[in-house]
Length: 308
Length: 274
Image 1 (cartoon, rainbow over the protein chains, first blue to last red):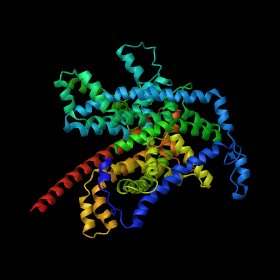
Image 2 (image 1 turned 90 degrees about the vertical axis):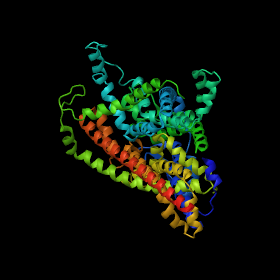
Image 3 (image 1 turned 60 degrees about the vertical axis):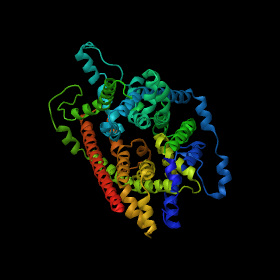
Image 4 (image 1 turned 180 degrees about the vertical axis):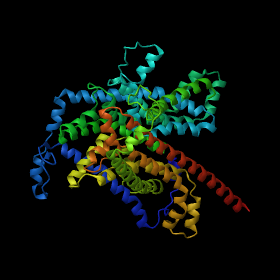
């Protein structure tokens, strides 16, 4: 689709130079002010020290005259602390592990769904897309909350299994507040984000390739691995990145469904900020998380540029 | 792609069951007379009246609605401008960085966005509250709007726009008379997406809120941590109902507008041929 934009380089569609200028500059300045500038500040605060004051960090910027003094008080102490305490390293590793496993599970569940949608008759495809999108419109928090009632020991899953007879009346499902509950919550919440990019990649696919393969005697499963799957790679990468990146920093799901031993960096950052009120340390945690995610974010952006 | 329709049907049934059963259970239990999740105590609207008389919850709902409308409107204006900038101006300084700034917030973990914005507000000496949450929401929703509107701008027929410009219509007027009506379904869809994202957000709002600006998700979250109560089911059901009606209404209007547009184009082409 990028070709469409480049094939029609309309020079005057935006209007005289000042309106053109406005259309570009207003959103640009907004994003620099409220998206880029905060990252510079978060980096600066991560080099500060915790203080019992408001705001709870020192040094404070006290004018251009004292800038040398200000800079001399910044240091990498928080980062050194993060590497020395195994809690933080384990949190990062555990977040990456949970995000990777969840992304894999999402692919395994999302791919057959997207494929089935792409193969469905054209007339019902918009309805199927709508059915995938609709849960996404309902609140994230509500969807996670819905699982608490199902998974808790005296919840509906226990009741169901007891009624069916798979469980004795004195047994209970021990999933709530474990990593399993976190995986269920993540897969449930992110499934639409995985299915939609996969579907849009699979839907565009040219059927004649598969017909040619089958005419030449290629078995369907082989045709899938040789043709369908490679051609859907852009969708796979887009879906995987759209899920993997935010899951790594996820807070709500591990907090509501996970146990005390479910380590995730989003939860650690939240505790540092709201519990311990250590803003500089929370900033350092965020900066390292961001650095870890730079590569996936760049893969995602390249993919998007190709798709659009 | 003619392989095993039965397999496909099974996959879709299981997939949609997985997506919908928890939501349906949630809705059903909001009408439960019993406080216990596993005991069905008969049909009752008790929890709805309890919710209605819960002043804290109602105040939070009102704050959320105002933040949502304001940030969705601002986000839609900024996002539409950003989409125009990305699709209509092939080259301007920093275009690469600009598209990067549009895509990055879509995947950025909320804890990072929330914390960094908060630190900006503190550094600027702004008191946290209604406006800081609104600005925070505008910033991330405008990127979603930009993506939605951009995809419409990329696929639409430019000849009408060009005709208007050739006939001497000023560009700003062309935008409001020709372009905006044509992309309007996408703009509305973008607004709705922005509104629901704002309605939904817990993490970014928690960082950027202040006294008197408790939003509904913050309120729900603090109650959920205390335990599951049917009252929360009731408010969740109402939210789900509102959003579902909104989405279906929007998709029907879009479909009607699309049909009308196709018909108009046919008429125009036939008129031109004559």
